[in-house]
Image (cartoon, rainbow, N blue to C red; front, side):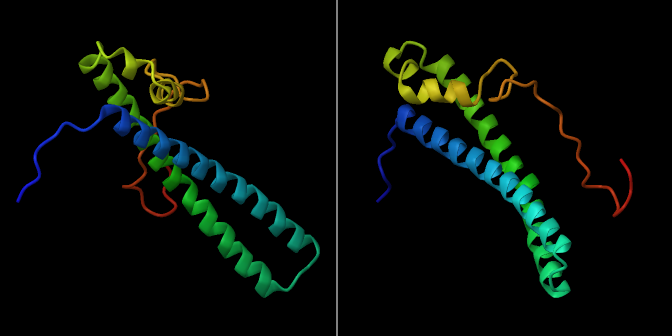
Length: 140
């Protein structure tokens, strides 16, 4: 038997989206921090002339961390864009619901994904150039 159709609670949806964005922001920052720490550790290993096999394996670890940065930033930016769009829809459709417009999740959503074309850290949005069609080593 199908479930009766009920309207999803916008405050709960907003909370879920905000928490997802917070998690993805932390994840992206973690990968960037981890990469910097691994670069320093690798340099230390090279300076101390550790076993070449250990250095090579650690370079692989560093490479994996570096590969995760663009992926995590992409997921973060997509989630922030979705949150920004969701807030815009709520502001249009639920403008009369003062409880929703002033709840803690709405305040947090507006901090994370401001609608005035600024990013959460206050900088201007930057267009991302797609390099999918480039061959290995080809300049863009």
